[in-house]
Every structure is written in structure tokens, then in C-alpha cells.
Length: 264
Image (tube, rainbow, N blue to C red; front, side, top):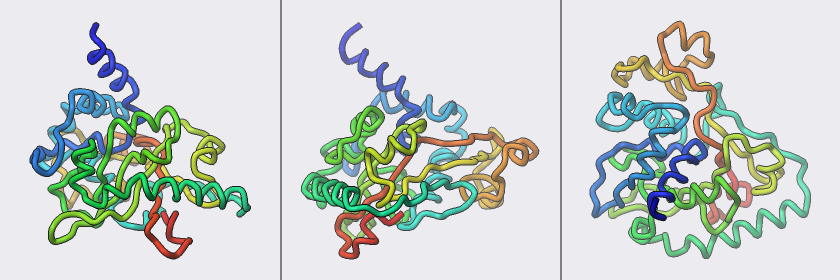
């Protein structure tokens, strides 16, 4: 087995640790974004125990899970509902404040070149569902996502956060990720819980297999839907997932108000 094939298998095995963006099945213009590699496609196949052959039936604009997750994440401030779990803030302390400041000071120069979004695309970041209108776009680097499943590197955020402009995209911040099974103490070791609130997406009920992802369904299913228990999901014929993808935390290093730098 050659080295390249071994690397693809290793990445596919780590798929459950990758963020939601591997679910995007958009056909993407190579002038706008890099194509999805076989490893990323395999990663999507294993994501949260869902089969991508089933997901391809969800609609031309991407899978139901991807669209639902995008709905939940596209705002600058995340919705604290039945589908979102956020860590509590621990007591403020000087060492944590210092460490959080150091993370931001490390991130700032590391992503400065990505103010030109084309540089981000050229360096392996891919736009999650670029053809779907969003308040904030996630540009994800799958190599960094895999790295984040093993250890924390503040210079390598899993995703860059952009807003759409008339002539491209404007860089707003970044998103770090951690494995689904990470403990609170392990999250704290990455980004202190006294400064930032990590979040995860929970209680997801997807529409029945083969159903169209339409407005009528969106009120009931997805990460903004009314269904938030396995019992209700089963009764509706949906597909239940207690937690989809790993932990995430946003950071906005260009904010001048310290309270907004780690705003969720």
C-alpha cells in the first residue's frame, strides 16, 4: 500500500472527528474553491454514522444535515436552544486571560494573509455550501480539521469565517474545533472556559429518508426544528442523531471590544 493511499485511509478513519463542513456536496467552481478530495468524500461518508448515498437524495443544494447545521451556525451569535449545548463560563482569572490573549496574538498574524480570500482557497480552505446564501461563510481546511482531532494548534484554525461582499469575501474570524468526546478539561486546555464558551450541536432529527428538504419540513426537523427528543423523532419517522460533529468555538480577533472577541 503506497503512502498516499495509507494517508487517505487514516483520514477517513478519523472522519467522525471532523466538523460539519465535510457534508457539503455542492458542485463548486474551481475558480472559486478547490475540489473535494477522495479523503474528504470518505470523511463525509462516515460522518455521524450517516451514509452519503442517502444524503445525496436530500436535495441539489446539499444534504439535510448540512443545510440544517448551516442554519444554526450562519449567525454571528449562535442560538441557545434545544439543539445547542454550550459550556458554562468558569470563574475569570488572570492566567486564563493571558492564555486567551496569547491565542489571539498567535492567530492574528497566522490568518492575516487570508484577508484575501483567494489566498485561503489556494492554501486548502474550501467554502461550505458556497451557493447557499449565508450571513457568515465557513472556509474549512480539512488538513487542519484532522490536526485538530489530535492536538490544538492556534495557528491552524479548522475554519475561517467570512462575510460576503460585493466583490468577494471579508475575513471576520476563525473557528477552532475539538473531538466530539473531548472532556471539559480538555477543551479548557485548548481555549480556556473562563473566556470562551465551546458549543456542540445536539438533538438532531433529520427528515425521513427520501423526503424533500422543504419549508414544511424545516419547522419540524433539523437544528432549528421543533423536534428535540428521540421519541418525537421516531414518531415522525425521522432519523435521530444525539450529537452531530465535534466541539467548536469561534474567535473574532479583529473586534475591538474584548467581550466580542470570543463571542459565541
